[in-house]
Image: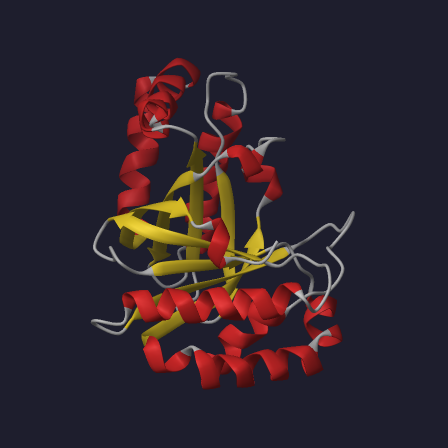
Amino acid sequence: MAGALGLALGMTASPAVAQEETHMSVYAVSPRPGHAVAFEEALRGHAHWARQQGSGPGWKVFAVTAGKRVGNHLVMSGDHSWEDLDANRELAAEAAARWRANVSGHVASVNGGIYRFMADYSRFPDDVDTYPMAIVSVFSMRPTSARTYMRNLRKVTDALKTRESAPPALWYQQVAGGEQGTFLNIRPFRKWHEWPNEASSRAMANAMDPEEIAAIVAELAMVILREETMVVVLRPELGSP
């Protein structure tokens, strides 16, 4: 897993441009007990090295501040294609070696995967970089239930797109690593008083009939196996633009 994380942290390929499908690598990193400060110092050094390697999608690091993973970090790459991964194999190998030598000694566990950006389902703000916080939710489906989930999700996201008051929401589907049939939802926000769940609920109530909402909720309850939600805060000094 350390090698896979090194791949994500070391990637400096050209950003994916005008592609029909882009991906994002996401890793949840748990520091060893008592190593939180040392881990961040090591990660900061790794980021400094990565910045010196050139331009590219880089990665952002978020600290988990609410949820059952408080104290963990989420590492999210910029958009990339499969070709980007192929083009950076040598650099990724060097990044993995540096990670093992300098960072992994402070890490208790790493879990991650690659996610496909679901552009048709998402409400992507032009100024997404001005949002320092986000609600991150992970939904795991029962076997063979992904299509049912996506069908109902599409009804919701299409309805919300008709309301200007609906807050931004980014949707991703896991395509490599971890449990298949997993979806990632990121709801960025700038300030706590702009809590996006409340605005989303109001927009939903104005966009859809209550009976239709109830039917969707009932069907989703049959296919969702697990859900985990956390609040994360951007730590720009730990990442690589």
